[in-house]
Image (cartoon, rainbow, N blue to C red; front, top):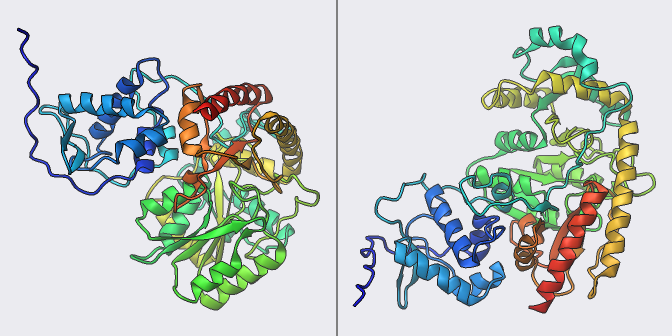
Length: 496
């Protein structure tokens, strides 16, 4: 008679709070890209999450039916996964109490569980140890695939500046003066009087948001974000452990009326908005709404951080104007940030902050605690590009228009059709599914080796479950192949 396999000893861990199914799916990441049976891939992804410390012992798993739905697998697959992990000692179940995470004897201990990884973070940091990993075509990143330099500007063209760069290295917390002067002149020409000492250069727009949020944040004071909003902004605010308040976005950007009602009840530490070609909706805030937002900032003395990183990527006539909220009320505590990463190339991590001199001085002190300075070579590339940036904008806009035509044709071929409104500008379109749930659909798409970001990851409240953001910056051949795979996945999803 075969001997029964001994079960692991009952762990000395009691169940705690249940993890939301959406959060667990984000932690699992690209779990189903391989060719092994789905239950084995799911089990491996959960083991890895425990080793990383993202699933701590005692965390209750969501109901199997809910988890199966969001993972777009059968309940049988989830049951098989749970049975396997339970037999190995990674999970423990008690009837009436649910199933919770444990850790087998001898298994390596990961770090203490910290803030949960977002959808974005999990896709930036792939688990290198998984034997199931393979690369999917990426429809999640809203970037241009290739660099775009103005005529006469290139890395090779800066060779003569290398000696001077060596002398500059590490000396300027606020950045290379040439770039700060170019940005100040650029903003002044477009209606926002600025001097170079009101500018601090940052390592991309995300660092600019982090610096501003760190400067303004206070314990227990909430930060107001748009809903939906830029995913990295949510990551920044969550990393500071600030309470988050959401204000909806419509076709004209942030709802200032809703914000005003909120300010009548509470005093947030800051408001973060993307008035120029909002990410992900593509909306452009009109001047009257900007004026009102600046007035609210002045009246309530609530700092507003405006992100102009997508300036210049217009899909509407007259969209090349720069209408800064800070220019509407010079007495309002408005901080302006921008970036060269979207326009020039995602490998050039150069951003900037424009604020009062005293604010810039404090922000520079914060910056030197996290890096020794933004690379000077990248700063010089940006400085030489800015005076002729209109050339870059024109070339990038032409690519966005071509991509929009490709996606429009593709959307028209779907049955039932997805809906969307042509954005004012930016690098993506915000589509609505006629049926189903975008996170569930994303799981099916991964099995066809195409990745996109479902709408709920752009929301602090996990709203917009029927939305999908599609990027406009990818190469047209790449975009066409990815959309072809996505259509196959969509038809399979409809069949479920």
